[in-house]
Length: 234
Ligand SMILES: *[C@@H]1O[C@H](CO)[C@@H](O)[C@H](O)[C@H]1NC(C)=O
Ligand SMILES: [Cu+2]
Image 1 (cartoon, rainbow, N blue to C red):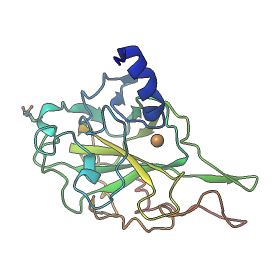
Image 2: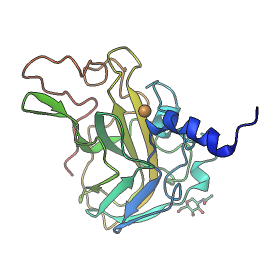
Image 3: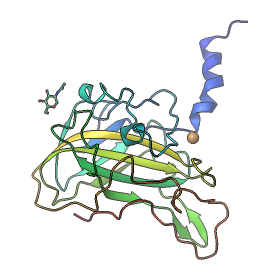
Image 4: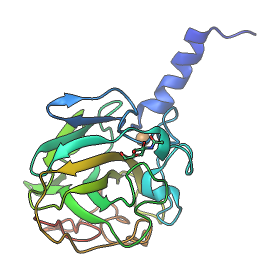
């Protein structure tokens, strides 16, 4: 039996509908086309998540760990300005969203940039309790923005978005990580000292109470513990 492309698409669509990527970088109020300033990810077609927090692909999930960085452009942004990410389709799962940055030497388009303990957190959107119910502000978002810290020194950086989907997180490696990295050149920077600094991979074990938990069975008065370092206020 031959299946038409339309039939195949209708079979495949429900499988990928649950997942998402972050392919478009927002700067100066404009969202770029897919994978121009964001390193194209290995899941650009499948949208499937990373579940190992120790794999090299946990850093930026590049299509090609060696070559993707060099074929991605670098966007110039001012410290203190608003930037963001636009999703391939709205964030479907309940979870925790955060943003890490790292200086990128010698350049953001260098595949070995940011491989040490150089990453710091600049933004987070954690689950919050509302009327005794854990709610997920990042769920169903199509895009979101945040500020590049004003005192961040000028230079080349990576900006890594991470959405940790928690719908199946009650067992080890059940949490699903949706990741990508934008390449930026920060100008008009300050003289702040970002921190605390962590390595990625390395920042998580996968057993943190904010990564391995059953979101459908939480004690009264529960407060979600964000995994990883605190947000640098800049
Ligand atoms: C990498 O970035 C640097 C600095 O922006 C640039 O001079 C160089 O041409 C880029 N390399 C590639 C392969 O695009
Ligand atoms: Cu999914």
